[in-house]
Length: 83
Image (cartoon, rainbow, N blue to C red; front, side):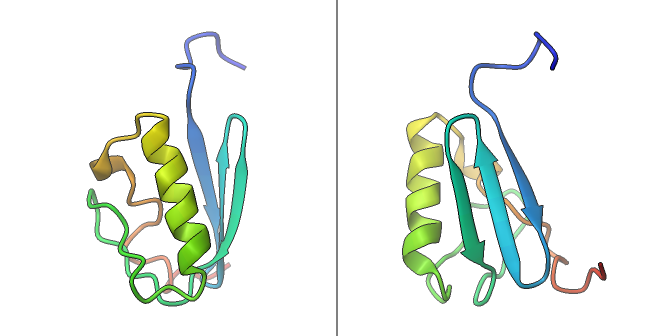
């Protein structure tokens, strides 16, 4: 792995049904139902099936210093992508 990586990082894996957000020291697995992401805006969890998990993940990201505009986590068209 690159030595140029910052101390904290995350990567998101997703299908139209589920999302996995992997941080350096923690992994979150959530349903994508009820999530409507907007590019460069903190993801809105108000209608999420797994609202508590999404909120916990966002709170964890914020505790690591991830800015709101990077808390979008999913592309806007994630439900239309075929896998």
